[in-house]
Length: 176
Image (cartoon, rainbow, N blue to C red; front, side, top):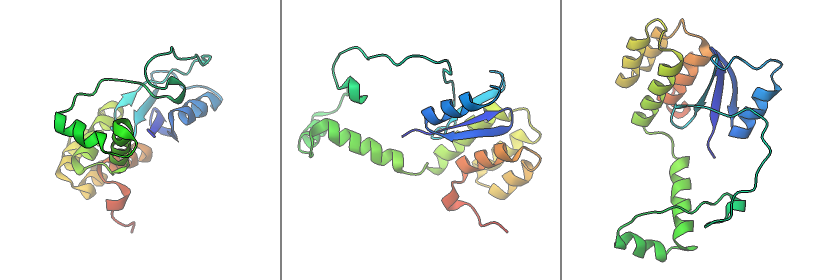
């Protein structure tokens, strides 16, 4: 399940599912100005927009797939050998593809993908910060200590979220 993190200016507001983020933002005593509110996809570091207006749920139009379950039919193009392999999988091709996607989503980000996610996140929220360019270089060089030193004057929520992309918890050094 995709997760997201919301910031208002430099302050962390919430992390979780789309519904959790929307609920948390709606529960705030005063919603931050749209210019100050940034929401990021935790898998890619990309900035995304959520519609916070109250909209009545609508019934999806009937079509291929199982719309009531959130299943949408789309085209997939594979080589014959891939189709041959898929047809022999338990539950058929669709179930096998869902299992493969779920397994891939559970894998931690590769170092390259984590660095790219940190870059996208920092470009949106910290591009005007002191030492920004040098901090990005430290991320791509894999130099966590240098990054933390360069970002030491940044708001902790911004610095820590970027470091979390670039160096997932499993590879983070222990605290002194």
